[in-house]
Structure formats: structure tokens, C-alpha cells
Image 1 (cartoon, rainbow, N blue to C red):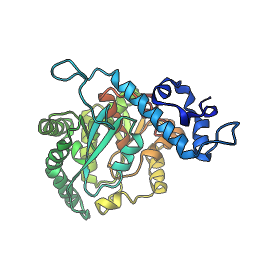
Image 2: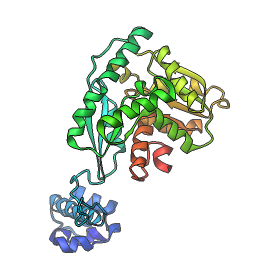
Image 3: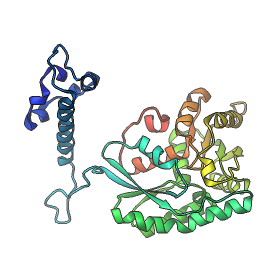
Image 4: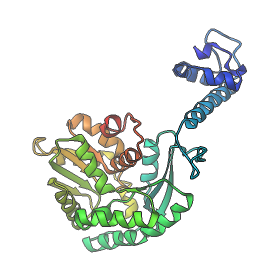
Length: 328
């Protein structure tokens, strides 16, 4: 095994030849403890770590060198971002949102990078249907400014970390919103509404759904309209009526768990539960709920990032965050 060799003395060419299966848990243990298996005179942990880092670097560059990125002349491989060599995502989310960025980082495979652009919005105090809708319209109006900002880093694709506006106006409204963003940016974008639809179609057998949101009733009506347009029956819904944009991120898991149980009802009239509202922390809870409810529980942040990965032919299976990322 690798940790039985003095890897700190190996040169670059030798590191390239090491078999992939040598990078196992025993090496991690060796790095952490600073010793090699069966050798009390081990090199310092930092030496092992440098060797491991070098090996990983040579492996990633070797993998990249085989990729068919061709420049306009078609002669040599085009230069790619050193860290985002598979794909650079431009992520758009409200300036008040504190959940999307860490959620998307949880799901990010190696070679993919997320570049966050904040859609300016005051921390609106939502106390009625009217004030909630007015607040979301401000976000919608400021979206293209954030698009223009993030495009200066030349992302390959955009991921929308804002969901309410993507449901307004039904399926047609969602198409129009997506088209506006893609026209401004010149690249594709995954939006929450269409990503949830794609997720349910991927699971298969989903016709009747329940919806959980941090919104107000008038916005839930827009969500139901969108899903009805898309061929689903919304059996029941719950809107938490959070009092500000930042208050959405403060909703505790134990409250959300109770709401999921309530939405599931007798368990026979709902095929899936969909959570919308990107500042609601639901990625881990939804993954756990799938196991004890025995049906798809779709967190919008999971669906949107999954959709962006698959649209870009990044098929990595990511464990621990629900069936959507693990299986499809």
C-alpha cells in the first residue's frame, strides 16, 4: 500500500504512476498521525501531505489533458480555469440569502466552482400578501443586474438560487423568466421551478404533490398554478409566512419536520413533497425525510443544483443529500 512506501521521496514522474486505489483511508490516517504503517521513523505529516497533494495535482492535470477542449483554431487544447476546469457556475441569489451558498458548496464536485452574485434586496418585512409580493418583485427587477455582474467572470452556466419569481405566471411565466436571463447572459440557466419539475419526472410516478414554502398564501397560489400547468395535482400546501427574508433561514429543522409529517397526511394521497424557497434550510432534512416517509422529498436547492450538473453532463453521484443526487 502507498502508506508503506516513503512517498515523500518520490518524484513527479513516480507519483503519476501510483495506482488510484492506493489513495485510501489508511493514507488519510497516516497523514493525520504523521506515521507510516510498520515504520516508527515516519516522515513528518506535512511531508506526506505535500506528496499526496502533488499526486492529486498530477492526476487532475493528466485527466484534463485528455479532455477535448479545442480552441477556435482547432489545433491545441483551450485553456481552462485551474479550479473550475469542468465547469464554472455563476450562482444568483438574493443579497439576504444565507442558505444557497453553503448548500451549493455541499453539492459541488471537484473541478466545478460556484461564483456567487447577489441580487440586491432590502431585508423586506413581509406582513401581508401584498408586502410579500412587492418584496419578491424587487428581487425580480434586480436579477439582471446580478447576471451582468457575474458574467464578468465568464461562467459556463448559471444556477438560480432564488425561487419565488420563477413560479410567477405559471409555466409560461417560468419560461419567460428563464429566457430573459439566458438572453442577457448568453449561457444556459437552471431555475428552481423547472428544476423541481425535472426532478419529479426523473423520479417517475409522481402525479400528486404537497408543497412547503416560507411564502405567503398569494405566492403559494402561484406555485400551485405553475405545478398544475406542468401536469401535477397539488393536494395540499403549507406556507410558513416568514416575517422577513432573513427570518426564512432561521426556521428550525424540528418545525420543518412537523410540517413534512402534516403534508404527508395519511401517506396515500401524496406521491411527493416539494419544498420551495431557497433560503429555507432543507437539503439535509429532505434527504432524511425520504427514508422515513418512503417517497421523494425534493428540496429546491438540491433540485436546482442537480439540474445544473446534469445539464452540463456532470454525472457525479453525491451521497448523503438525497436520492436525486445519489441515484440519478
